[in-house]
Length: 426
Length: 100
Image (cartoon, rainbow over all chains, first blue to last red; front, side, top):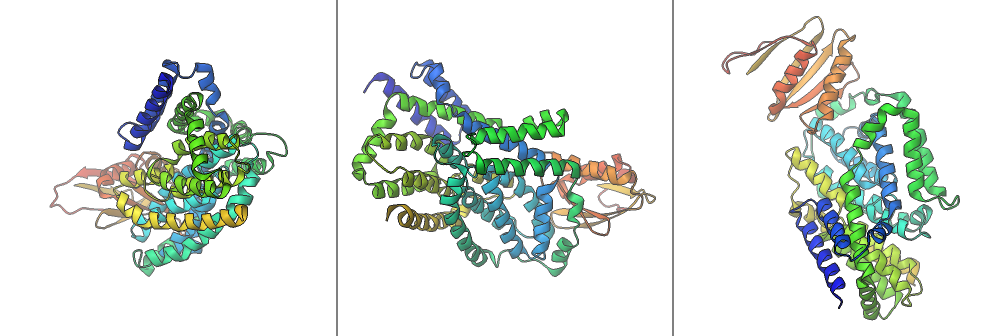
């Protein structure tokens, strides 16, 4: 093995271990790892830049800007309180409607942004009902990962896969992943009712206090709301037709974001940019360069060769291997670096004789997104919710979440396996 | 402890002390300019890093509610004072009875 290859593997594994250990912020680790790949000559600066997927970054930045400006209007709080009132203030019914709202929001906005919007309003409702917010947070984490599975923009792994494989359009994700996401979501409803029915009880007076709320007062700026809804609608429509008009999803999101900034005026510009999660964006940049180092030194191609040898190039075995490996790995390590590594591996499998890559891509998306429910560290959304809860004095423990999340993850991956087999492999 | 006197021309403020928090009900007698000021207080507590320091609720009968964590009680009362919803605020001995 060449010295450059050994160095690339060492940098990648050390970075990966540090990301998992969470001793140092993952963005710092990924960026230093990426910088080392360039400094040590494993990849040139030009090649490193070539490996950065600007479509993923543009899509994330564009959506963050649109959603953060829309949040200023009070729309998301309004929807949550309106839904809580439709549930007649009953805690279990509210838990279910907030879970469904999280799933829908995750599918069309992205799951990280959605939980950032849902958690504060969840605290507000649970405090008023004087019930424990933890069951609400657990169900929202799980729903965010299932809802995010359904679309190209729903979960970072899907954004990365959709960006890397041009044939997998926004519509293709909906047609292929939404049916199974809906089945899993429908199955979660009775499971959550059974699990949490005794934990979240309140008094009729407190339920009435939810009914007495005036949600319309939460809409703070109706002119801005009209602009945001128009742009959000146009952007989502743009995602549906992006392949027909030969425009990348990032162009749609960024065009939407800057159209909204044009309509709102300059005063929103700085605030909108300040609310973009730059650490996440730079985490992706570092990660793309780290994986780029492995690609350039042939490590990914060798791993793909070994995987193909293990399954004999059989699409069914390879799909199942990818689905379960992605799910189990994503449960214990962040699914973003895992998917960043798997994408070039699957691309290499195509050149090694695996004729039909489509089931492999859907297996990777399903495994990585649903696997995120296995543990508290499985997905970015999980960590964000746990962090927000801890800051407010509510401890969502690793073991507490795993007790619910892991069996649900196994159940959903079994369903996904059946779906992939029946739809693509039979 | 902190004791306060409402500005009776502006608002009627009642509070209920719970185990971990204090629940305020604010009925504004003069909406202009005090509704705007109440919204400023709400924005201040919503825009900071802590979500549950003071949670605000708007009711149908134009009453406003706030559930304030005990550790943020002083901050909330001082915010009411700063925005003219209270007439006075003073430190009192723990044993002294709080006046409204």
